[in-house]
Amino acid sequence: MDEKGLKFFEELLQSRLDALLSEALETVTDLSEGEENFADPTDRATAESDRNFLLRIRDRERKLIVKIQEALERVADKTYGVCEGCGEEIGRKRLEARPVTTQCIDCKTEAELREKTGS
Ligand SMILES: [Zn+2]
Image (cartoon, rainbow, N blue to C red; front, side, top):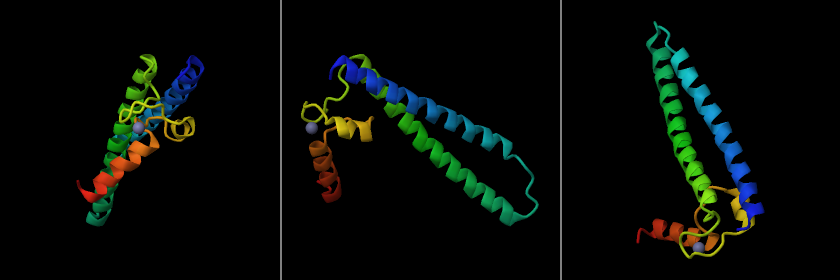
């Protein structure tokens, strides 16, 4: 990918990362503010499942944050946009839709098929 393309995706990835980090921070703040006394056990159960939900979101966010950081590293060493499966350049449209992707659509489809059939 040329310098212009790398710069474009660096900015795109960086802004996604910033948004995710501030979201994650808000989730953490919500969690620590949720320390109330629940007299009613039903309320408590709801609060507990809410908390599980938040933790799950945080886990998903954390994974995405790591993926974005890895993508930024690939931008830095100029390997960004190259498919890890076949070594071909990943289509620009696909990268714009999913900038953390590491595989071209062909390799991704193949990988998903393998997952489904379990082989
Ligand atoms: Zn490929």
